[in-house]
Amino acid sequence: MKIALLSDIHANLHAFEACVSHARANGVVRFAVLGDLVGYGAQPAEVVRRVRALAEEGAIVLQGNHDALAVNPLAQAGTLEAGGAAWTRSQLDASALEFLDGLPMTATDGEVFLVHASADAPQRWLYVDSVHRAAASLNAACEDAGVRYVFGGHVHHQTLYFRNANQALMRFDPTPGSPIPLPPHRRWIATVGSVGQPRDGATPAMYAMFDAGRAEMTFYRVAYDHLAAAACIRAAGLPEPFAQRLERGL
Image 1 (cartoon, rainbow, N blue to C red):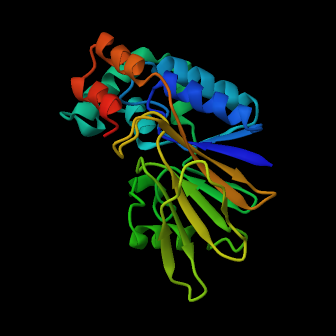
Image 2 (cartoon, rainbow, N blue to C red):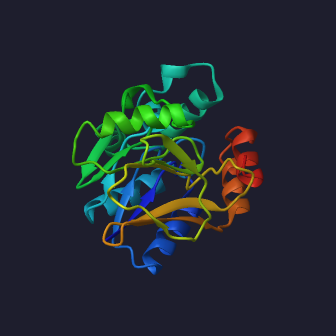
């Protein structure tokens, strides 16, 4: 069965809807949302509403650091992110805030371990952005002998790591749209990229699809109206850098 892995939506409804539509067109019936539903973007209430609808269909939904910050926006007082979090909180009703507050930080689905940041300390929001950090996350998740795959977000880049025959961890930068075999005799860890705020110099949204039956993973880039999403940020009065990130992909 195929499962779409979406992370770091960041209240970007345009990007989220584009990725969900793309996934459904590719035969996906299951979704996992790996945190950071909100933060930075201009449509937090709409995104939370749609993610809750996916959850009612059976989607796994995790909490990210920006979701936690929206529930408690004073945690980083004085930063752009904290200011944006206070605005985000003002846009969410009590039910939406309760939903975000109650989300788990990790989930296991068969051989797959899901986390927003790093499996070795989910609550610290560590970035899996190096072989060293990937190894720490993979080792922690694989303390459960049944886990073969670890998928997360948080770093806003698409990267795959695997253990070779000598148990050394190797990094692989995927080509979007090209299926990658993930045989279960190895251990794998991937960051699936950001739906709503790519930071690699390209504007298309990011997500990934894991096909457990075929034991393969495909990373995708999906074009969407990023200029309209940036315009929504400006219309909401949010900080200008939040809009520029969408326009520049940085």
